[in-house]
Image 1 (cartoon, rainbow, N blue to C red):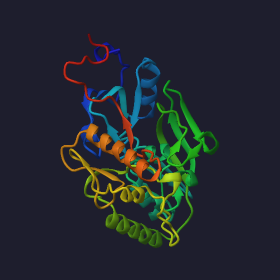
Image 2: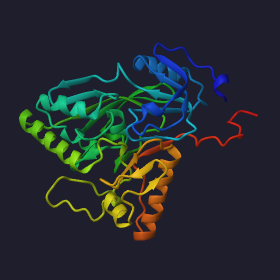
Image 3: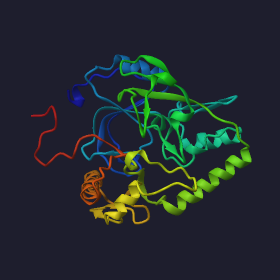
Image 4: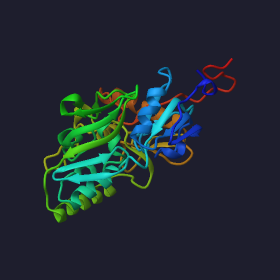
Length: 321
């Protein structure tokens, strides 16, 4: 079904055809979405999905911090939550954040209330994505603090998922790929606000010293092998960190077109200016190949890659011709 043939349900939010997605991703690459839907609220979202032809693909996009959108864009409807989904509420030791709330803002608001969600402070992106990928840092993961989530399924059904309803693993969950997270509730341990603020300041300083925070990147490119993760502890080892095996394979600073493995942190794929999604993904695949040849270790993408490759000149788009 082509874009012009698709009949979409009425909405109260914003529905934009052929919306360029490159400016919505941190890497600044990617083609257009057939449709971009920004719902007014959860009711608007549920009604839209309930009325949408089941054959139309749906992709829920956060702030684009951990994403390569391919140059041909995304088929169907991309859903991006914004205002109406970024509130943060605190009740006792419970923190409920809208899926569009930034991880860093949730950590800061919790700390002000004397609640420890400091592990979120340096994680790029929003809470919906943090839940979906079981984001973590310094030895703590979303799974460790998760209490419940409000989710809209592809058919428009609204459900509350509790601890026993989601299987968490290293950098992944079993949430349905076309489900849309609208809010997440955490149970957080208590802490002194001043101590929590100091801890976050230390984490930020450590991040800024070791990561290319001023470059166009999407955070860590590959998962650490075997699930190894930075704990921030003195006995933390680095032998099986993704950056180390990339460095050992001689790929620090490797380039393809405008794409580069950061000289500062070789597990950060950066757009040095004018890179295409194909160059970024191609460089990542080249790194995976050469690391395997060097060490026998298979790296797995942490960055999500979605959408269609760029159309070759003269080639028909799906549904054309």
